[in-house]
Length: 339
Image 1 (cartoon, one colour):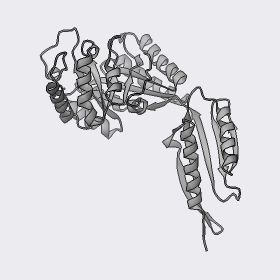
Image 2 (image 1 turned 135 degrees about the horizontal axis):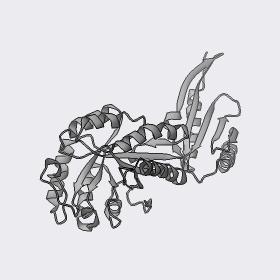
Image 3 (image 1 turned 45 degrees about the horizontal axis):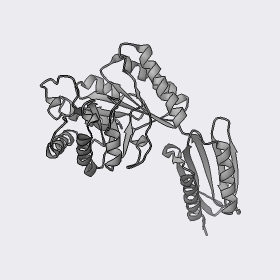
Image 4 (image 1 turned 90 degrees about the vertical axis):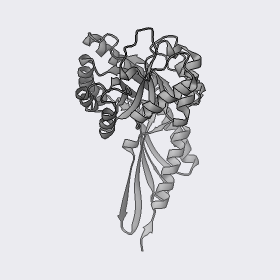
């Protein structure tokens, strides 16, 4: 007769997940594993759980809290905190028949959004080859918009609509500006522009503004933008093209998940040194805050060359690259990361 402990193992894992959630830890799906095992008439599940904890949260404090919770729950805990901010632990029932292993690392998430895609398949191929999770922001109605969206999805990248919005600069009469959102637009025109954009790029899960230093300063237009986007259940990224932007606030107050850009990688695109310095600033902010978001552009060779070289280095140093949506604030959340 087989003594089946799989149910207790999974119950222990659920209890551990509940404790981690109450402590504000995020699951690290890449480090979560379950393996069915059997030996000497006993069947059980070897459960491993991975989490991220906030950068200012001490692993030693978490260890003390985990030990206290385990004792209260009648579990046996063996835990150890490391100087690098890691916490490792094994939890078991007193009879030792069911156990779970935990490993938590200090959170350090970096998101990179590459803007202005849709004009060139050659650079799009180079972007999707970058060795990390990445968000591709595609201008609708560009010659290769639909093809780039499909290419990005095929390579496991995230897709945003990079929506043209009015700025002080003269707008050329080209197809990609036919959907530009302008101050004073009636609500039905805003909805129509987004309907055409999502028809062109149907797999988009978010929107950020292309240019738009006039549009994003206008509360009325931004309210209409968020009203048009809310039924689509997408996120809004404020690219931060003007210090006076109200776009992120309109998204927050309009019930959308939202985020703000922290770093422009290529504000000085002709300077490899400046581009590299901005990437380093992204990583510094990610370590300090737990997460930070940068925008770069595919058309600048210095940007792509720098990312090809620097991303693997950052990964080896413990930085986790995530999609932009992973850093989104909840609707109404009164938190704003300052650029």
